[in-house]
Length: 218
Image (cartoon, rainbow, N blue to C red; front, side, top):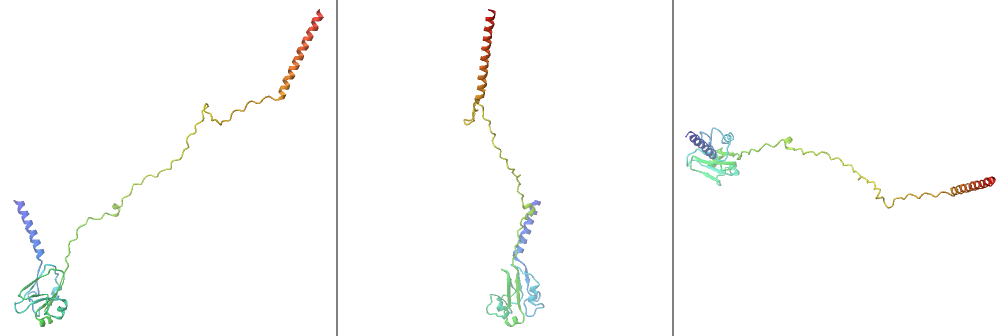
């Protein structure tokens, strides 16, 4: 029960604040003097001391039939022209609610009293919406992400394929064949022939000498 009462009270406060903000404030024009010819404070001086917003209300205090309030253009305000009002308030103790921002020009329905200063300019401030809270932008140090640096690639030296030595059985066809042994020269042949002749002569001498010895003994 306690929680339900607390929740109900919170809802009531929220509703009352919403109603109050939507209705705006009620301003009494001229204060205690009301809407008269010679107020104790000039109407425009009074307006400059206050801040008016949309949905605020002006209360003009006057007697019905003795005066009126006219909403007019800027030109009619300065000329006190009462013939072309935008809106007329004649019921006495009139209320006027601001439905937009910008300037509003009010004069009395009596042109002579308007020229004496019974007129009012109210400037309504523009509606200001509460700015939406945006998430804080990341700092430059955290926003900048450093890309991973890849290690430098070293050039791979080119290696020549190993040269296979030709096998003994697979010698290339264009290999140079060993040169045939050179023949002995003619001088070598001459020497051999000389030794043969000498040897044959010695053999003949030995045979002849042996025959002489045999004959001697005979």
